[in-house]
View 1: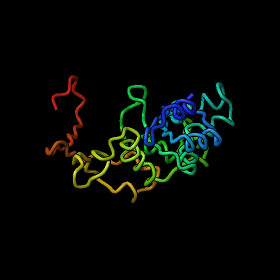
View 2 (view 1 turned 30 degrees about the horizontal axis):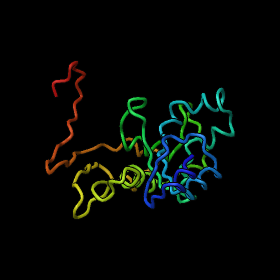
View 3 (view 1 turned 90 degrees about the horizontal axis):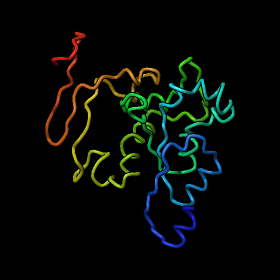
Length: 194
């Protein structure tokens, strides 16, 4: 439907974004590129439901290519990754970890050929996401003219082992010109006074 719609009403920079695209194959990603379509893949899916999809719902062949980040990048399809909050926990570094490691709950790597690098995952959750929203001129990177909203991390994500990416702590954030230091609390108060 998008092909005929774009033919009837051309728009050079529409950035139409397909959400999830869980089972898209290489040919479909090629078609996305031809149409100028972006994709936002649900990277956390492997950890939470990868084993069930592999064994029960879609079978091994489809499960191994689920959320095909590597294929999207290789086919030059603009890509973002997301966690599907509140379906899975909100946490960009955790989502990056899922796309980089592709581990299931049982610890199995699901589709090693679809893994992406830490740098590619960080790009997907920052500038990639901003691009799909047509906000890359405002957010997603730290440069003159953009909002200076960013996180300060305890470690360099590109300097840790891939398996440790999700364990990096956020030291603080800068948003709207204000600095907010993360609160670390060992108490288990409910409700939390911190």
